Length: 348
Ligand code: FAD
Ligand code: EPU
Image (cartoon, rainbow, N blue to C red; front, top):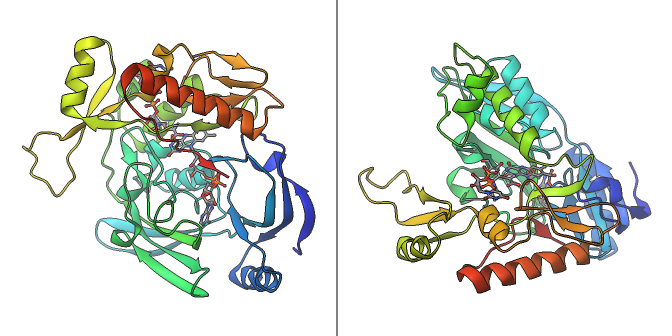
């Protein structure tokens, strides 16, 4: 597709923010991408790469070229005794990919069911839910290097994955366009049911024999009961990360607020299992709720009534209004608890 000028992005971000791209184009293969990048370079235009817009907050118009990634395809590329290696195009829908794997009994992504967005954006913040992160099933990815003008391969170590972090969100922000991702999926499933209310949900569903399909359904049930559907109310999931604080600070807060919700932050896999967890991950939703924000609404910007960690657009809020609300929340949590929240959503 050739580029269009002055393109409305409201339908291209799940917050439903009314913002405009100076230029907009989609690409579905590397040749199209190369052509569009050459054109942008000739015009000295900045390039912003868009997936499904489920983790961005647009606070202004984009004065450059917005490129929507629509590289498709899912392919079994290799296997060994224990694993299938599966490559998916960056423009595939993440949940579509999960369903594809479930249909073939390829295990490992079932806990990540129903996370919105594209395959290509998944490594960006090392998407995670219900005890699993993409790094647990990641093999490698290929990305277009905007600086070097060529494709580069990233292994697991190269990606610097952390909690809602990667090299693509930090050191190399804006430099790479992820083209495809290869996953290492298990032939024999390893079930992760310890997190949150998965076991409870499985019981409620009357599951006798555990399967990846049952876990996926349990996760889907929990998610749909808690999180607002962007098709109904604009949002980008958790707006902030859950803060990780030193254990001493946690003990002090627990003394003052016995109901505070915190989980031991597991030591890195390389560390001995017996070593004490170094830190505690707090539930940001609890902190925000305690500051009185849950269900708050100012105009069309609000804090969701069932999940305080999710900021919402009831219709016509601007990105700036949502951002200002996030700033107020950040300040009040800091004042009350001495804890600084960090935004998870990419503010543009
Ligand atoms: P976009 O929002 O389009 O882009 C996000 C960022 O990635 C941008 O900076 C963009 O420039 C960059 N990017 C996108 N595609 C590429 C690419 N191909 N190459 C390089 N950079 C790229 N996240 C979780 O981790 N866990 C959850 O449980 C979760 N639940 C959510 C629930 C809801 C209701 C919503 C709305 C969001 C949720 N999210 C969750 C956040 C979101 O789903 C993920 O961050 C998802 O990976 C974003 O994908 P996207 O294609 O929409 O990315
Ligand atoms: N809580 C409250 N009040 C609230 C919300 C939460 O007190 O309004 C407390 C409750 O005690 C609850 C606890 O916080 O038990 C945890 O809440 P929840 O299980 O809903 O998970 P979360 O920590 O708020 C994280 C991720 C989600 C992910 C779920 C499940 C982050 C920033 N968020 O949310 O990811 O789906 O766990 O694993 O880590 C996202 O990244 O966009 C996202 C939705």
